[in-house]
Length: 277
Length: 321
Image 1: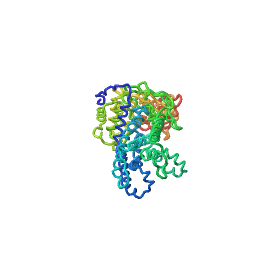
Image 2 (image 1 turned 45 degrees about the vertical axis):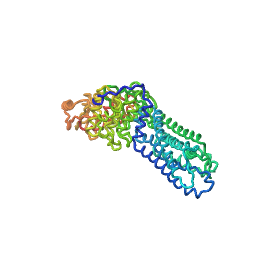
Image 3 (image 1 turned 45 degrees about the horizontal axis):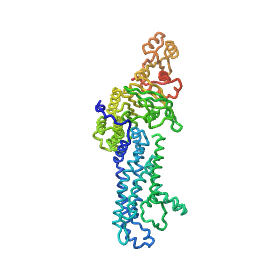
Image 4 (image 1 turned 135 degrees about the horizontal axis):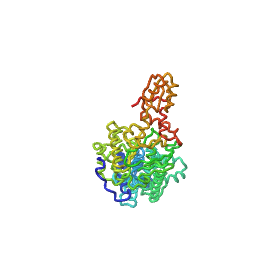
């Protein structure tokens, strides 16, 4: 029969390997339109909102108080768009796994790679690489465009100033880790709509509820919110504006974000091991 | 070779598979027959390591699925139609699978050719018909040139030409010496394709035998008779070793004697007959009967020959085929 006329070269190892599984995950990720669209959305939304925020700063500056001038952070201002762009990358993170469950592809994937932890790890690693590259492009793009647009008397930042490079690079890192957190939620919840709802809830709804709590409680809990951590990681000026939530330092924030992502992926991997596909 | 040993699977309160054991041998097509919802898909998912049995174990080529070194090179499976991301092309879907098991890209084009999807390899799978989705699933199963193949209802959604193609493919794979395990709820289809049968109902094994045996048993003839003296006639039949069943419409069904013998006996006893027509139970009827009441055959009464005799009980059979 035609189907056996050619022989497949014998494998060189005893068992399937992480490299092959990662190549497969890359093929999966790049071969669906939702990847392109969510990444383009991340870029357009983040940079677009940064353009709006920075180009209107000249007018705002002349009307703001000396206290506001003191806490002004041009780097952070140019990265304002990350607050919205993070939604798009989170949706990609959720879809990277929930779409497999939604379409039934997961069963073909697990038939090819029965080691479920390896499958999830390879998926997370490939997604993290893509999200990091896109996140850094977006973050540096927003910074450079934004600094060009801050006009009038308002000061602008340069990449060589103390703490600026770390804050801008931190923006990309934050996006990648947040995307991984979303992927982790997707692996726990499995349903696209449910996982996206959980992600948006963590990201945007909780910060809206917190101000209703007593200030001390709000600040204690608020410090742990991804959005607060992201804002802190992308800040250079440590002068707090009035009413702002105090936050962790860059490195503690980075470790917390990595911890969140690892926790979500860990629970997701544990669930995958125990549940039927 | 597939070995299933005492597997049980419960979903909530429902027992989907109940202490099921059987073997699927290489070099032939083994049909996995049962009504919808009898546990066929669940059993196949457990063989593939996708669902975990509550008890028992399954092995493929002697090891559990999870221990296979290169799963796709040993086992190929079509478990459900169109289990593919609608936005991904057929070629990318197969490439992603091939990469996990170090299968070269050239093999992807080859299997696309075999299933006749080369011209639409770049199209998004969401645009595929159910039949094309089935072909893509079959391509994925063939990808690693495996020695063991599982197909869950492979002819669903196929046109007659596609059905014939799948039939020939399955037989060819069996002739190659591979282990081919095909589920279906259609007895007639299995009669044409399979060499061996594993029949289940409500998650339990009902029969495991060569197809010829199954056909021989289920093609048992009986004869419809009408007479004005049913009691005398029944006595005469029983004294000659036949069984007689009264049908709802007043006719009698006689099993164990052919029409000529019945006619001769009736003549000797001077019993006028108003009808004497041989009937043949269809294969599909036999299967329906066998699986419908499968719960009755639990514990000892699992002999399929016994089950088949119930064909004659209180029902009028359709005219023979």
